[in-house]
Amino acid sequence: MIPDRLLPVLERTAPLAERFAASGYKLYLVGGVVRDLLLGRDMSDGRDIDMTTDALPAETKRLVKGWADSVWSQGERFGTIGCQKDGWTFEITTHRAEAYDPE
Image (cartoon, rainbow, N blue to C red; front, side, top):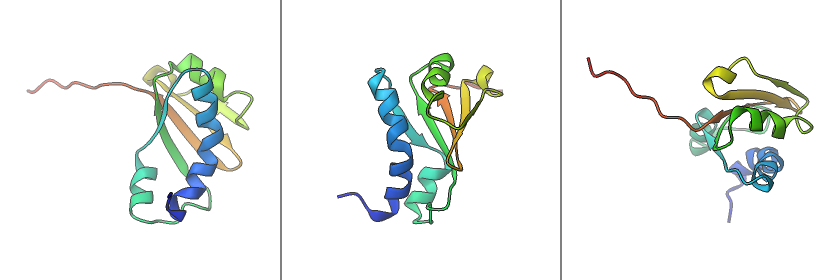
């Protein structure tokens, strides 16, 4: 059983997740939306949703076009494609790893 507090976000992200899955990609919720859901914060009024995927940015852009009301690619060099749908903002980033010099 899915807790009611998760439903607004799952309803908003399901069509997008289905598009990615139909093309063989995975899509995960990450960041502040996960924190807010775990803390029980109200997510029904439109929020920023961060997601991560195994799709490359060009493929992400292709998948969100035709679904999103608008698409932007300012963060594409970092693997992030942004879009908006019905007042909700989505930033989808290709999985990545970061390494830092210990000095």
